[in-house]
Amino acid sequence: MIGVIGILGGVKGMGSEIGFVEDFALAAMDKYLQDTNASLQKVLMNPDKNVKERLYDFYDLRIRHNIERMSCSRGCFVNNMASEMANNSENLRKRVLEMFEHTVDQLASLIKQGQLEGVLQTTQGAGQLAAALEDAWKGALVTMKSCRCADPLHTSRRVILSTILR
Image (cartoon, rainbow, N blue to C red; front, side, top):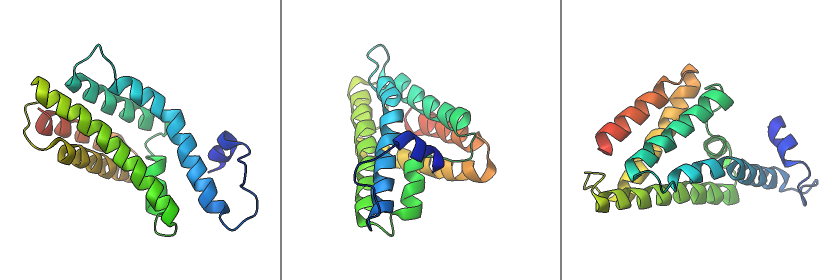
């Protein structure tokens, strides 16, 4: 969290009031997403690639981020906040859920587009597939943190994209 404090600098309203930890956590998650979301959006919206290529690039970028910036030891900041604090803060739980749902919605939209264009052969509902992809990714992140290696991320990507999104 020390790095997050440095990133956030002074956040207005984060004095000694009772909601300090909750306010801090919410601001930290928003800042984290602001910093990481731009590159992910660029990949997901790349008009020069088809849907399947964008999905592969999306997972490749996520894997590189976890290897290069997190040394396979920290996982996703938002996932960590969800597992550590969502039980204690309804506001935090709701914000995490919004973030998760936003990602699933983006992936579902892309999957649906790929199905309509014939790039993705699956007939499973796009929303269900997107939710399953994200759940599998979160599980791979937990395993990655345990073994401190990228193998679970590569396995998840390979199985998800070659089997589920063929």
